[in-house]
Amino acid sequence: MAVKTITPTRMELTRLKARLKTATRGHKLLKDKRDELMRQFLEIVRRNKELRTRVDEGLAAANRALTVASSVMSPEMLEQALLYPKQRVELDMTYQNVMSVHVPVYHYSVQNTGASNIYPYAFAQTSGELDNALEALSKVFADMIELAQVEKTMQLLADEIEKTRRRVNALEYVLIPEMQTNIRYISMKLEENDRSTKVRLMKIKDMILEEKYHNT
Amino acid sequence: MYKIAVIGSPDTVIGFKALGLETYPAADCEETRSAFRHIEASSDDYAVVYVEEWAAAYLSAEIDRYKNSVRPAIITIPGREGATGAGLAALHEAVRRAVGADIL
Image (cartoon, rainbow over all chains, first blue to last red; front, side, top):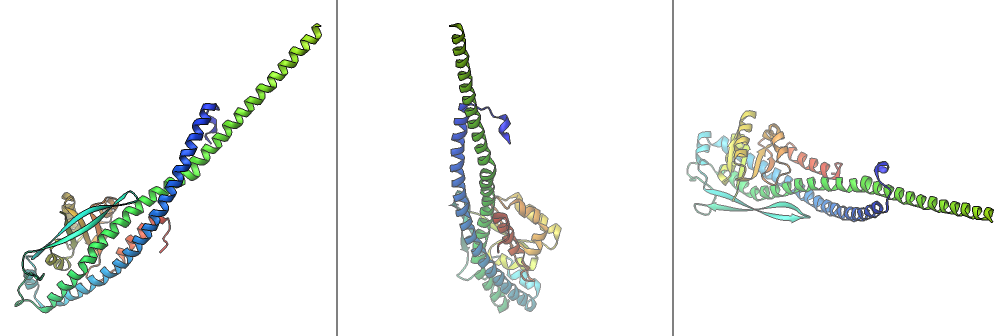
């Protein structure tokens, strides 16, 4: 490992110990973040699955009705009937903060220019099947908006979880063990230096004493 | 205020038009791409883009590009021939990315 490049000094040891402490705390925090993100993510995934089935079913029903309508009416008539929509959908977007991931929240409002119904045509020239199709569509629309919100949230959370997981793993398996080995290396080297100094001093003392003994 | 766009075959999107969404009828790969480019050019206006499943198959690179940006959310919807599971595939993809394995 990187043991060879570090200088075994007391200053370096203090610095490394401080870094290790920070890294350990960061690791713990990130792990907590990952766990909470994961919990939220699984909730979102369940919701997404549920909405997806509902939207699939709703759209299938609407498409069936639309197919029937287009078989009853001529294509030109159908197109003409729906050419100018009566209502307009406007979408407002705010953000919600989920573990510092900004996920969108959609609010939609329908601007209806005419009366209370959604049909942009007169009833005389169109078939009842078309009414059914449009009704089915407008029913599934609320779910579609929520599906969009949930699916985007899911994607953003998935990205964040991936990043957090990588960070946690990098800390746990690379950074922290490396620092621990370095700390061990430095402290052992320092102890070794201490011992060798002590031995040297003892040796010198012996030499001095011997010299004195011989002189007297 | 944002708009919602729908890309799909002409007879599918016609219903959404009556709901008041912006529709981009497309019949083949080329038309789908140009519809998406059109949306991309004014992407600040769109918060949600619904793409029919067969069209989403042509747009996979573009959809991937917007996966991690907040706007627009690109959502696949089943077309006239019914759900083919492309919507659920996106879900499984996200789970695999987050968890590391497909646990569903």
